[in-house]
Image (tube, rainbow, N blue to C red):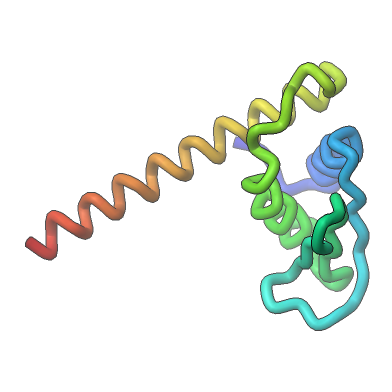
Length: 107
C-alpha cells in the first residue's frame, strides 16, 4: 500500500507530531523495538533500526491511536491517517478470518 522510504517515514512522523506525540530515536533495552512512555504521548524507538524498522514500529504504535479525530489534522496528515486506518482495519479483518479458519480446521 505504501513504500518503506524516508519520505514515508517523514510523513508518519509529521502525522504523529500533529497528534501531539513525541517520537524519539534512542538506544535502550527494547523488547519490541519501541517503548511507549507511560501516561505520556511519547514513543521511544530503537535508534539502530533502519527506515523499514522505524516505519514498522510506528505502524504498531498506530493501533493505539487509530480512533483519533481526523478533523484536527492537516489535509496531508489526514490522508496518511486514513491510509493507515484502512490498513489497520484490513489487517484486523484478515486476522479474524485466520482465527475462524483455524477454529474450523480444529473441529
